[in-house]
Length: 88
Image 1: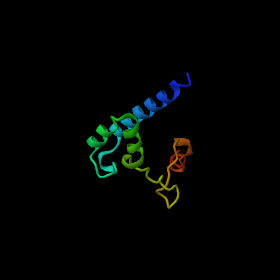
Image 2: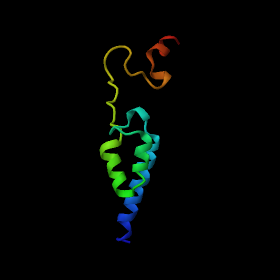
Image 3: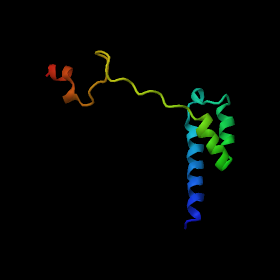
Image 4: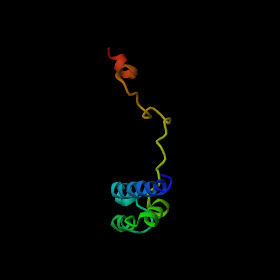
């Protein structure tokens, strides 16, 4: 079982990298290569996966700020919305 664990981890990371590459936004892919080229690079299980995560994967964008005026984060439920409650 201990011999199988690294193989399973590599296969899981490889599958995740291929799906992540396929689902990534074409304009956000880094590394100066097209999304198709990165997909074919990720076909190499260990090396391609590492290259995708280090050089090709899009970086996370900053989360939207919650402050900054009246157009900030809106309440999720109608009973938490002051405008809705004012109209009752």
